[in-house]
Image (cartoon, rainbow, N blue to C red; front, side, top):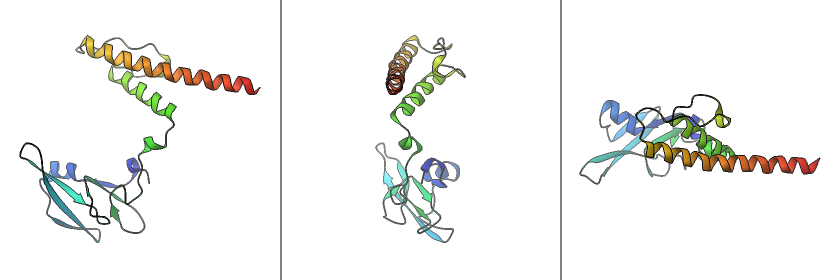
Length: 153
């Protein structure tokens, strides 16, 4: 199960919309229990108790077979990024940095965007340096891949 695509209930979002939830909720034929913990500055946080393992979790996921709801661990859930290669994760990270500074198209082959209005130069310089380092690794890996292809022919 890919968690990013699965049916899920995030207790944090429910609490924002509706306020604190009852301690026991009957939902789709399953009994969902909540628990509270204290936070550092005197507040309280509400959690789901996983119906399968009683582990506290913020998000519970739905599965079609077996127990209907459970935490990510009980459901065998993984995030989509766990299925990506190292190279794909590098490209995604570099693209995310470029979007942060205002790039909308062109990918990694486009020139790095100019500093957006209102962004501190220090922030822009840090983002640019991080993106350049990641992109250097991306292009080095691409060149190594091309060299391996060239050697095979």
